[in-house]
Image (cartoon, rainbow, N blue to C red; front, side, top):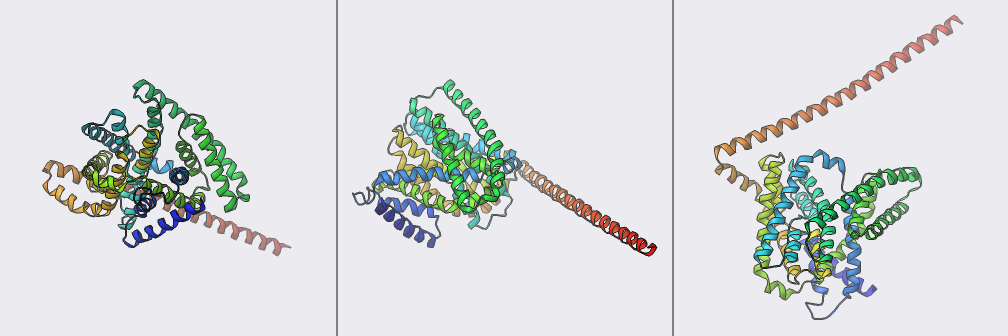
Length: 447
């Protein structure tokens, strides 16, 4: 086991360093490292696939736990309309498009359903990294894009649970599915409410005794406890990890736990992506290259169209909507997890896995270049739009700018009120102090 871990980590480290030098996402480096140590390239097992798969499963739990830690209810509420309308448009649109692609490729209902689920989720990690590297982290569209990604993550976890249920029964029954959704919704609400009532209070009580070591051990214990609870309730372990992350995100220790979890998440996430690469046969990439190219085009075009429409319908400007759509042109973590689930349960065609992973690699590689094309594409679109549409675009721009100005003015007024209250309190304090001093002085003179 130590030998396997050594080979795996040293290969992943060297390859990811090379990808860093080439200014490419390290996730791609981990997948390439998996291909190098996997059984398909050299025809023999350099490392034990069973060991790597076990570590990869733990990695999935930690990745979802950390995604839950990044979830903030107030952030979702602040961008409510954009998050809900934008995410719903992308998810529903890509589900329908992905299912249609599956049926067009003569896949059965189960394979088409899994393929649709793999295509409907953008990668939170890759999108935020691409935005940061492009110097757009302060851009206006980022807040809405982040909220959409959070909403997508929630839906992805729900899809994992539903797909597991459908795959086990090997049937798609509408009534049964609605029952499952209802049970899942009630369970999530109960877990979340109970967790919010108990855990933050407990952490506040013991906060003076929580050093970094104790806090990370306690957080991991709570995470794994919720994982076991989810499994006992008949749901996936991934759901339990995500829910506990959401609960801890509402505590005072959220940022501290997130900071402490980062190294552990990075290690096990690397192992997970290496395990993904180990399942890829390079010869299959040559065999399926037309399908890989076709799926990549579907992802890019579909995400741009549905992302732009969803954000526009959600109230964003056309330019911001297009920037969001153009940054969502890849699939990532959840697509791999869903693909691995289908392979593990034996309900998906073996060809789907390498196609999805290769399409993810290709779209991830193209993401920064597609994002750079946003402004020229917006200018071209605006120039060739009808006069009526141009008026709507201009009106939306003015509407959003006015809303931002009003919000800024409101914040300034609040700040001014706070300053005035502080000044008033200081004046009252000084006057009171002066009166007391005069009183004491008069008393001493009388004596």
